[in-house]
Image (cartoon, rainbow, N blue to C red; front, side, top):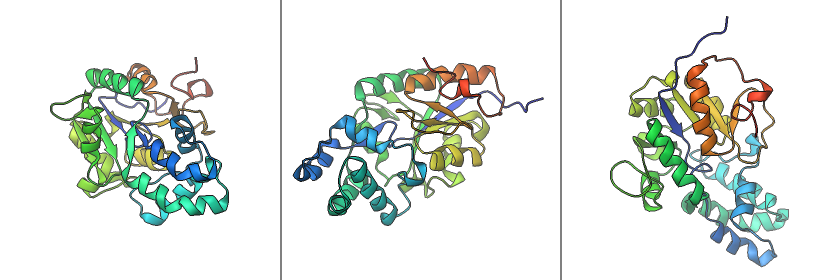
Length: 253
């Protein structure tokens, strides 16, 4: 008999890559001298490569983020020499300059989620994640535009960063639920999915372009699919890996 897991009572969402995206205007300025187009869609697709070993792991130091900046430029069509030229500029964008990701879709979807289940934002950042989310009208913890969430668990504030388990435990504490009852959704299999599982939380991979080949964890393309996951997770409660038909939020449409 499969081991039974308790129903989900709280939701943790990553910020960068899920709610926020790198400022494509500033990326475009850096790449324009090379004749490379970098609109919002192009930057988003390049950011979500599906190659987790070459993924974005903020909070792990400048060399790691700069290496990702170099790969991001390559994915956008830069040559090795061009990518090296813009590495430092892209690093500054990834450290400082983020915009709402698909705001016309993301903000209403987040509001629906937060009206159904307690939500926290769990992110590796510099202590200013709550300010950014409030500024752009995505989420707030008191009064403001966007969805009301229980807390913004920022690595720069709590002193622990993904993939360390402590940041997930802090998120569960903010929700008032045990880790095994908090679903975490993020765009990195390493820093979100595997790390959340190691901390005792169920997890799903935010993979908007279906680039992750793994079949040992659930995937979602949108926040609406996160909402669709909540009912099946609360009905089912098996910790077995999803079947291929469950690979994307209980099946593709």
